Image 1 (spheres, rainbow over the protein chains, first blue to last red):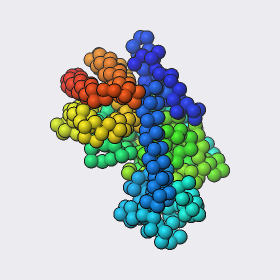
Image 2: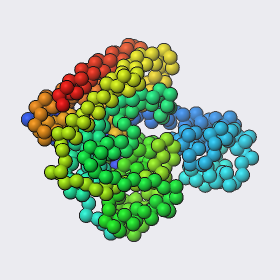
Image 3: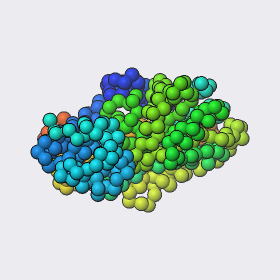
Image 4: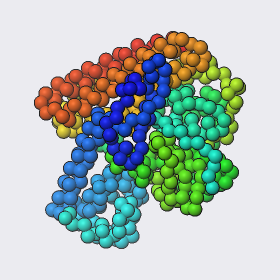
Amino acid sequence: MKKSEVPQDSGRIVQKGSREMYYAVDEDGEYTTALSTGWEAKNIVQDHTMEVLQAEIDQAKVAVKEGKRSPIYYYMLLTRMDVVVLAGYTGFWQWRIKRHFKPEVFSRLSDSRLQKYADAFDITIAELKNFKGD
Amino acid sequence: MQLDFTHHQSAHCESGVASNLLKDKGLNLSEPMVFGLGAGIFYVYLPFLKVSNAPGLSYRPMPGWIFSRMARRLGVKIKRRKFANPAKAQQQLDENLKLNIPSGLQVGVYHLPYFPDDYRFHFNAHNLVIYGKEGNEYLVSDPTMEGVHRLTEKELERVRFAKGVLAPKGHLYYPTYVPAESDIDWTQAIRKSIRKACNDMLAPVPIVGVKGMRTVAKAIAKWPGKVGIPKANYYLAQMVRMQEEIGTGGGGFRYIYSAFLQEAGHKINNPALLELSKEMTEIGDLWRDFAVNASRVYKKRSNQGDVYNTLSAELLHLADLEEAFFKKLKKAV
């Protein structure tokens, strides 16, 4: 890529006040560096990924509302975790976390267990308990 | 307290941190040199390992390998420590700063407050340097950022003890011995690291190097039929993200490697490397074309099966070009 071709398509990183560095060649064919504000191809796949994740979060919300899933499932998706990551943060086995996705199991969880989830999601126990999918 | 450390921006976090730490110790080694001497160019496909719910794909070796391999080539010694106890991890970092040692850290990116939301995933192999502390705030040189940042003790602990795949466990590292530039046998170091990269890319393993690329190319063509169009589109998006975003992956890495070949060619006076640098730059351009064509999937609604076949053929073509390239490169040193 030539230095003059380094894309300036206003991506996500520039919104936080930074640009990305690229290695590109100058007119004499020598490698140099150039800063980029973003690249459209990347913006498109990022937008698509964000849409897919948001759709999953919305579905989880409905599932909580309909009493099919516990709030733990919703918050796990909201914080972009999966069962492996959540197991890391809470210290629970993965199969136990999957059980805690069931509303009837969730309603019997002790406060000390709920606290571990609340810490992982960076919320309070009350927020976790009172989430009804609204 | 602020150490006398200069923040240089880089294209990739690990080679950037390594380059910055070595420059700080008086060895002026550019990011492309670190990347090339660490044989940073790689390709591995791990279909059984799901990353962000899509088949795992990596364009780089395991975190830490680039720095370690480069250190071995040049005779740099690195001290590495991991911690079970966050308080101890902080204590060690504070002691390092008192001893005037800027320290490299492996961190998770999800809780980094200065990262844009779209980049915040539970990806745990990011690298940055701490070069000072004021009150309860650490001074952070994140080489993928234009400027420097600050993190509170609590924020830093959070990212150092992020959980999930490749959890950093407080991983802290710094060079303890750096040779003088004149003491290094550059011809030998460059030759060995290039051969290492060629052997990796030409490895006779179906999920590694150019063979891995071919396996992925064949898989892509089958995705729409096998998992359905929406999921195939999601897989493809993750593939392009891995390629062009997480550590600059495919296209970006080809350019860093080209820059290395050019610098190495000048350094050891090998004109063949200069020519090969040009060739790798052109391959990098084709990787970027691949990303552009992949991103078109999300705009067009018709003929999506065809798009996947075209992408598959494009990736097979890239594999052919790279196979020929690495064979030539191996002979050039």
